[in-house]
Amino acid sequence: MTLTVWLKAGHTVEVIQRSVAAFHEATGVDVNLSVIPEGSAHDALVTGKRRPDVVTVPYWYLDELLDKNVLCPLDDLLPANGVAWQEFVSVAVDALSRGGLHWAVPHTLTGGVLSFRKDLFESAGLESPKTLDDVTRAARLLGTSATPSYGLVARASAEFSSLETYAGWAWARGIRVLPESGNPDPATVEKGVSDLVEVLRETAPPKLSLRSYAQVGELVAQGRAAQLFDTSAWAFFFENPQLSTVAGRMGYTTIRGPSAPAQFLYAEGLGITSWSRYPEEAAAFIAWRHSDRIIRAEVEDLGRFDLPRADLWATDWYRDAVARRSLEAYLEVVRRSWEEADCAHFVARADFVPAARAVMRAIAGVVDRRFADLTVAMSGQYGQDVRE
Image (cartoon, rainbow, N blue to C red; front, side, top):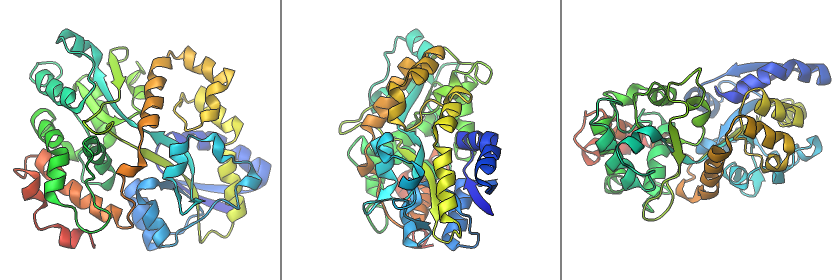
């Protein structure tokens, strides 16, 4: 028996690859593991042309997967395998639940965090940023200096995953960039994110939209950008002196607008497809991935501390591992970003992916100076794009 497992690139791939032989030895079940980019996985799953057993489930397009009957609920499968939902941070469980049912076991949770060059802020006489306006003012000030060359960077690719940057920024003003159904309103998008788009247009590198999220983060690690608004997971990279030139010079904080904290809520987990011939074995695999042995290896060996498991925080081994890496202050920011995370800013719609891609094409066009403003960029494209 062989389980076909699709994972998105990231830390969960490495932790599984290191230990999957032990799962086979214990169960006799082989695992055919593939790493599939998020957009490609989405497109393949919703067409049903390829049918794995276990898949990465991002909350962004969970509703589309359910609309197309791609997933099976986990509630009857996982309790027998030892998964306790109360051990997980509640917002991660909520993001991957619909209709009172659990559709994926979360292994990743991020909140919105501003990573910034603390040393540059201090040299310029700037305090730690607290608001959206603080971020844009600092970007314009620091973006005019010789080092670094860019005042603020953020995701701007035309892929749907980039929209969370702008949806989270707009939510800080109490604005949703996507309505519950139908086409987005250009005036609403403009009101929510025009200041972010303009400051990226002014202070980010040319053709920012061509950079992946990893390449955007590398601009900070290379000492070329003063600020990054993105997920809460970046410090593990920025504070690694083997990978980053700015280790020890960074600050991390959440920021607010007039209505709410800025978001970059991202939750993903492993789910079981409705067409799997081996749902019980698939459930055993997911439970194994979340077993104490694998979780501890993920923390201690791979240095992944921001797992969405609230039960870890009280254990001596976890606190000792955090202290050895001097990550106490940073993890306080991570947990604050989780506490501030609000699923209400996200519109659960089955056509989220085409709608988000359409908005991001407009935003990318303005950031890259191909359009004068968002109203022009968005004009006339949604009648086709949202339904494609």
